[in-house]
Amino acid sequence: MDRSPSARADRTTPPGDQVPDWATTVLAARELDPSALEGGTLSVAGFDGTRAAVSWAVDRAFITPVMGNDTLKKDRRDGRRDCLRQRLRQLAAEAPSTSRTDVLGALAAAEDQLGSKGGRRRIVVATDGLTNTGCADLRSAGFDGTAEIKAAVERCRKTGELPDLTGAEVTLVGIGHAARGEAPSSPQTAWLATFWTRMCDATGASSCEVAATARVRRAGKNTRVGETEAEVTFPAVAEQQSGRSTTITLPGSVLFATDSGELSRSAQSALDDAALRINDLDPVSVAVSGHTDSRGSEQHGRQLSLARARAVRSALTERGITVASVRGYSDDRPRCTPEYHDGVPDYAAMACNRRVEITVTVRR
Image: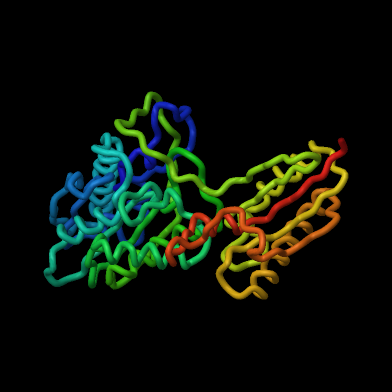
C-alpha cells in the first residue's frame, strides 16, 4: 500500500473532501476478499520512496480455512475482513519515511517476500502511480503517445530497476487517484494505465491488471503528513497576449486520445473555459490552428492537426462562438525546441508541441 505524500490527504485538505480509501480499494480487488485467501499465506506492507522502507506489517500469515455452518462461516469471514481493513487503514495512516513513490521497488520487495516456491503467487499494489523515483519519474512526462512509454520501459530495463516477476500475477489499483493536487484527464489517465501495464509486462509477470479506479472516503480533521513531494503536473491551458491578439493554447493530451482527432469527454470542461475566456475578450475574429510533433509523416501530421482544429471549431461553434478560419500546421510551428538531443527524443518538448491554439483578435 502506497503511503507516500501524494497518496494521502494532508493538513491543507479540507475536511469532507473526497480522498482515496486505499484499504477499501485493496479489499475490492479481484479475489482479494479474505475468504478467497483461505489455505494460503498473506503478507501486507506499506511503501513510499525507497525499497528499504518497505515494512511487512503482516508477515506470511497463514489463513486457515473457516469451519462450521454457513452462519458461523459468514461471521468469522466478516470478522477477518474487518480486521484486515483496520490493519490496512493503520498502514495508510503511517507517516512516510521519505517523499515520492517507488512502485518498482515495492514490486521487487513483494517478489522477495513471495519467494520462488511453487504455487500461485499474487501481488496487489494500491498506488496513484504518479510521483515516482528513478526511471519511472513522470514529472516531465507529456502523457501523450506510446513512444514515451516505450522509452521509459527501456530506461528502467537498462538501469536494472525492473524486478523479475516471472510467473507472478500482478494487480495495480488506484492508478491516477492522488489524494492531493491536480487530477489527470481521461486521456491522461488512459496513458498512465498503459504506462504501468507496459512496465508490468516488462517484468515477465504472468498477468498484469491495471485499474484506474479507487474507492473514496471523506477526509478527516487535522490529517498530517511527514514529508512533502513535488506534484506531477499535467499539461494545462495557457494564454499569451501580443498586441491585439490573445492566443489560448490547449494541450493535445487534454483534448484528444493518442493519434485521434475526436474530442474526448474530458475535453469539454477545458473547451467550456476557453469559450468563456473568448467571450470575455469580446473578439473581432477567432482562428483555430492544430499542431503536432515531428514524428510520423508530414502528410499524416497535417491531416491530424487539421482534424483536431476542426473538432475544436465545431465545439466552439456549439458554444456560440464563430470561428473565422482553421489551419493544420503539423510540426511547422513548434513551440518547444529541440525535440531531440543528440538523437534522444525529448518527450516533454514533443508533448508541448502537440496542441491546438485559439487566436483571438480584439478591438483596439
